[in-house]
Image 1: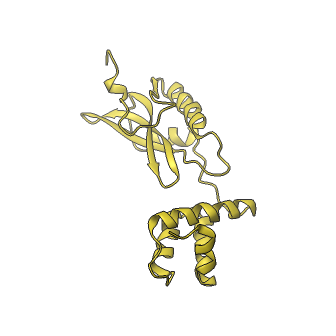
Image 2: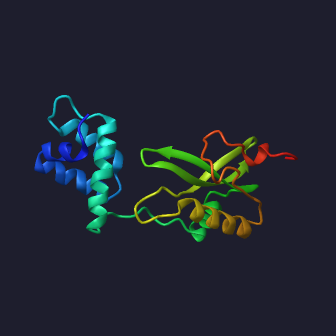
Image 3: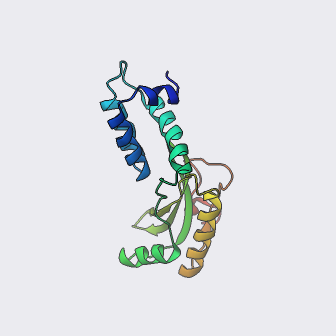
Length: 173
């Protein structure tokens, strides 16, 4: 496996520009795809090499002020989404999801359709400018729950797990 610096140096200039432009807009997967499809290297870079290169380039792009942060998740925006989708929340719950950047707190409302279902309203992925995604998600989740007049549930705040218990699984539910 090649080191990110070595891989970057081996890429054609046009592809390096394309990758940087994709990353600056937050299109991580498209950047890795472009690397894999257009590098001209044998063997073609794998996903792990692509992830390493993304981390390497994101650091440089951040230092130069070229990374576009993800859209801010606001309580007002989530309230509007609840109204637009005509949802009747029973609770606000934060679940864990994950991707190549790590664990992502995802803020959802619990609805009954007729079974309990989670409707995602906002994701809080880590990025260079967001140092406390779990705390941000928790604060906004509590504010959303208060505005909706429903309980807030975040059972595994310090231990990410995609198989966490849900609001409807709690004792006495």
